[in-house]
Image 1 (cartoon, rainbow, N blue to C red):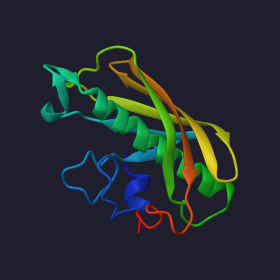
Image 2: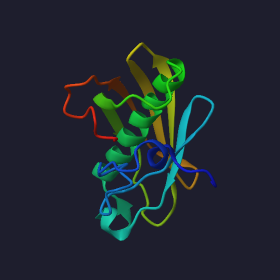
Image 3: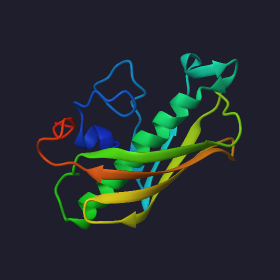
Image 4: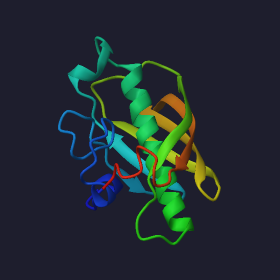
Length: 155
C-alpha cells in the first residue's frame, strides 16, 4: 500500500505501544481505509511469541484494540465532516482467540464499523493468517473531550 496509514497521517507523534508511530519499541501498526472501516497487515516478530511459532494473545489483543479504535475515530471524523479524527479511547473490547496464530506469516486485520453514534462507534474485528480466521473481536470506542487524560495524546 503506497499511501500513509491513518496513524502516521493523523498522529505521527503518538507513543501508543500498539499504534504509535513515535514508539520505536511498539508495534507501529498502519491502518488503511476501506469502504466501511480499516484494514491492516502486520508481520509478527520472534519477540511476539507466546510459545514457539505462535503469537502471544496479548499482542493479538493489542492489534485488534488499536486497529478498532482507529476505525471508530475515522468513522466519527467522516460523519462529523471533521478535518481530523477525534481522539477516541476504548470503552470495552472483547477478543476471541479461535486458533493459534502463527508468527512466521503476515497477519491481516479488518475492522468494520457496525454502529455509529454521535460520539462513539461499535466495531467488529477479525484477524487472519494464511486465509484462516485466528481471532475475532468487537469493541466500543468513545471520543473523549478536553480534560480527559488521553485528549491530547495524538498531538
